[in-house]
Amino acid sequence: MAVEKDKVVAFHYSLRLDSGELFDATTTHKPLVILVGHDQVIPGLEKAIMGMKVGDKKDGTIAAQDAYGFINEKLVKAFPRKLIPQSIALYIGRILRVKKKNGQQVNVVVKSYSETEVVLDSNHPLAGKNLNFKTKIVDIRDATPMELQSGSAH
Image (cartoon, rainbow, N blue to C red):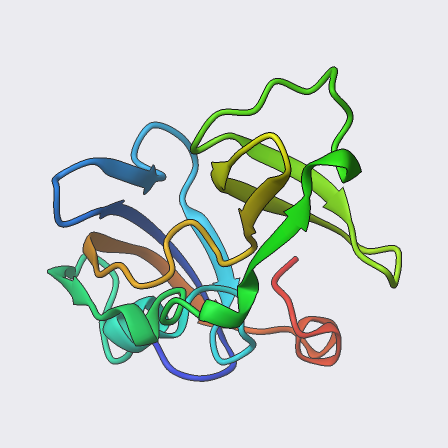
C-alpha cells in the first residue's frame, strides 16, 4: 500500500531551516498521523510523502511557497506605541499575542519599535523560508468512513 489521498499515514519527520536549525521533529516521540489530502500538514511535506510505502525514507527540500508561503508585506504594520501596555517590555523578535478586530487571537513578532511606534509582523515565523526534511513512513491504512467524514485521522 502506498501513500495517497484518503489514506491514514503515520510517519516520522524532521524539518530544518537552511541554517541547519531544527524547527520541528517527531523522532523523539510518536509519529505524526494524518489523513492524506485533508490539509493536515504543509503542502510540500504531503506532496513529498505521496507514493511512499511503509519503511521508505526520503530527504529533500520544501520551497517556501509549499511550506508557510512567502512573506506578505501587508502583514507587517506600524501601530502607535500607546496601544501596547508599558508593562510589556519590547525587544526585536519578541512574540506578542494580540487580538484582531474580529476577536481572533494571533501571534505577531516585534520587528522594530520606538517611543511612538511599534512595527509588528503577523506572517508565520517561517514565511519565506525553505525547509529541509527527512521522513520515514511507519504505517499506512485505509481511512474509516468517520475519518473521511471528519477530514482527520482518529
